[in-house]
Image (cartoon, rainbow, N blue to C red; front, top):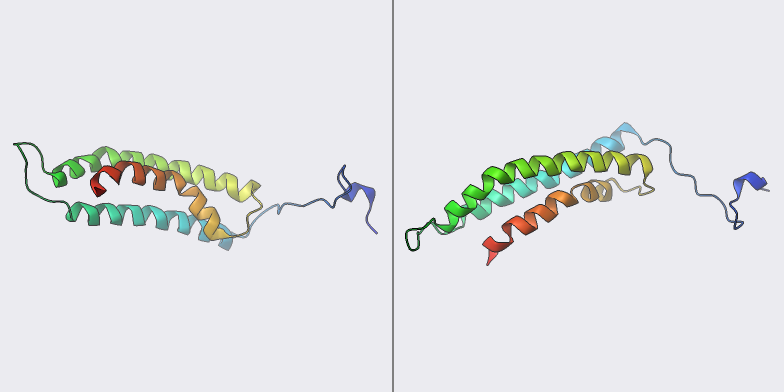
Length: 124
C-alpha cells in the first residue's frame, strides 16, 4: 500500500525523474550532438565541391558564393554548438527522455535548422 505522500492531487502515482544520469549517458549524448555538427560540416564541403565553378556576367560563381557563406557560417555554427551544449545540459538534468540519441539530436536542432536555412538556396 502506498503512503498518501506518494500520490499527487489527482490520486495518481507520482512520476519520479531521475536525479542524475551516468557519465556514460552524458558522454554518448554529447557525442551524438557533436556527430551532427561534424555531419553538417562534411555536408557543407561536399556541397561546396559540387557547385559549378563558372562565372556568370562577371559575378561570382556559385561555388565562390557558397565559399563566402562559410566565413560567417563558421561563427554561426560555433554559436549553435554553444547553444546546443547549453540545451543538452538542461535536457540531461530536467528531461525524462531516456534515449541518448534523442537527447543529442534535440540539442543539435539549432545547427540542423541553421544548415537547412543557409544551404537551402544552393540546392536548387
